[in-house]
Image (cartoon, rainbow, N blue to C red; front, side, top):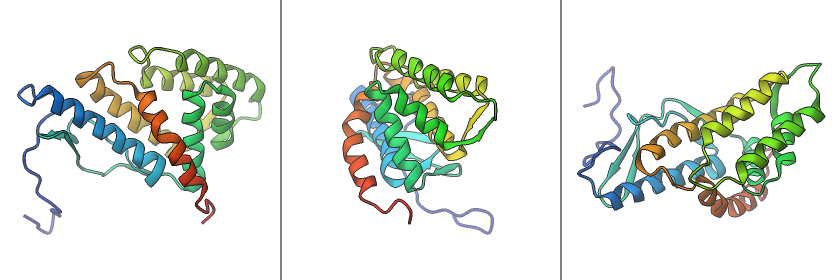
Length: 208
């Protein structure tokens, strides 16, 4: 199947579309959880993130397996950025908006001379406080990211591309979550992984 125009790496059978109702509900939910855990592992541990997780690239298999295809769009988070992203998520799930604001500001690709850091940090902290206290069924990555992007736009602060691409990956996967299990708790799953991920990231020479 490999030609001069196509490189075939592996054949995967038994793939089911995420909306396949003939796949047992338990299998679909287990596969959904496995995919989210894999995404968090890519972001927090590997630093190499599949950033194109639309339904054409995500499939389920019997037994609760999640298969991710076509890693043509990726984000690479080096040690410093990965550690900051972990701390950003810790700030979100523990309602420490000032940490989230500092990380966004310090990682910004561009900050206009007129940017007011104190005002920016105040608005980000308010947004984190609003979203971190929501019940799992009401929390949406898309709404939170939109609020952050709006604040950055108003303050003429533009985030680094890899940091933003990791958020895009989460946004894409959230679209799948809403179709399969709308009440899945993103924050609790992340909260269970973050302490170990941070300890591991901090133990590595982040300047390598």
